[in-house]
Amino acid sequence: MPSRSDVITPALLRDWALPVPTGGKAARGTVLVVGGSRYTPGAVLLAGVAALRAGAGVLQLAAAESTAASLSIQVPEALVVGLPETGDGAVRGDPGDLLRGLVAEADVVAVGPGLTDIETTGELLRLVLDAAGRETALVLDAYALGALSHAPELLAGSGRKAVLTPNLTEAKHLLGRDPGDDLDAEAVELAGRYDAVVSLYGHIATPDGRAWREESGDAGLGTSGSGDVRSGLLAGLLSRGADPAQAACWAAFAHAVSGQRLVPRYGRIGFLARELLDEIPYTIATV
Image (cartoon, rainbow, N blue to C red; front, side):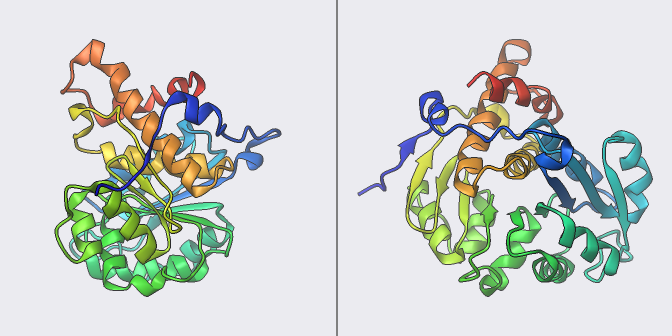
């Protein structure tokens, strides 16, 4: 029998209203995005700008050092830190005390966008989990999920505030098998196994078995960089004070509906992930 989940609707979200921080940017939290390589800095840019569009107060980007200068120009709102690289341009797993200090001070750390080496990503993930405070929220995406699949004990039983955002390939690694057709059930299994909220293609689950599904997504979201936008959107919502399940549900809806808003201009397919960014604040504000 298919698993039961609640459909994410505007009415559901209005009854689960996002926190509205008052005061300056510090009240809306600091998001640190750790990712990128020499050849994929755009993933960090997309995730970081999405976090700001979702309401984060302070943005910090940590990416391969060869890309730091260009990222700082492309995202002048952010503090940008260059991380040491391997010979093939991947971020090294031993980036040193600067990154450790940034992680320790961040309210939300998103790890994974644009990372390209599973071994160094595993080392990087261990550093982040070691340096992060117990109340620091985590968003794990892309290669960070591959690294986690090799070491589930990093999260399982930790009680950390974490959200995993796998696609079907990453879900296969996390499950150790091909996902079945019932993605609600697969999300619930992953949430229980890794002790984290899981957002799997719009299917959201918590470790205690609660589940939701977003039904507004369309084919246009299946484009390069779209997942990076979703991860950053999640991080921004966590930064402004949403709990992990709430942030995952709101992010799934805002991501999908932002894509819908682009359809009249570009059709169902053909819009770019970067074009989702400007739609995010309006989508959230008009729920």
